[in-house]
Image 1 (spheres, rainbow, N blue to C red):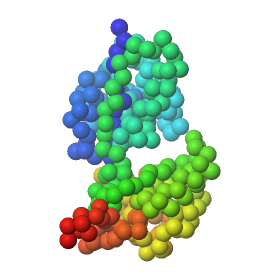
Image 2: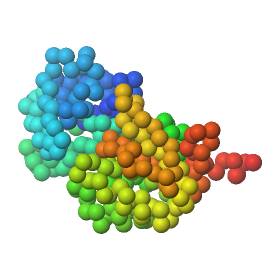
Image 3: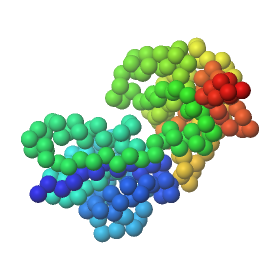
Image 4: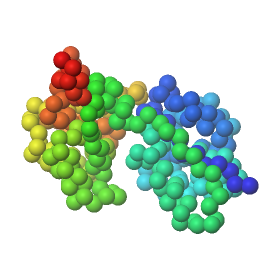
Length: 251
């Protein structure tokens, strides 16, 4: 019989932010699959006595294929993702691999277990910067052509969206972030509030409030989320806030 395949969002990384649904899915799993760093975020009591399949960076295809193979062998399998599995994570790839295998995988019981996304964790630490419309853009051009990313950044900036930047920088990708800031600055004032959150809700957490004009790319790494305010975003008591419009309407 075919086992289950659950794609589980771990949230930001703190066990306190692991949802009860995600906890139960991991408790019931016979096999846990994931990127080495994310597997390390799974509470130890949930890994005890289970088969663990962990792979390094760039191993997404192997991880998802291995998890699918495990489920097809009849084992209850959980593949773990940081944040939410449907946001820049593994949920979509799992479905694509099932589609590719056709009838051989059509009976796999797949369930996506939502997790607290990184942008929500970052926003909470900064204040309330996502109270109005926002756009999320990944600066990684490994899977998306840079020309497409630039177009999306320009449209988001011109539309006065709050802009959330995922995957802003890595050792091999150090020019994309300055270029992204340049594109956004063409439609934003230099005193626009910007928040940087590194490793939200983990031991090495860092939260920085700055502006578009004083932004320092050295404060950013691959594990950072950047939130750039819109024309109405302002600082209130040290917190980054984008008003929804309640005060203007009711006061």
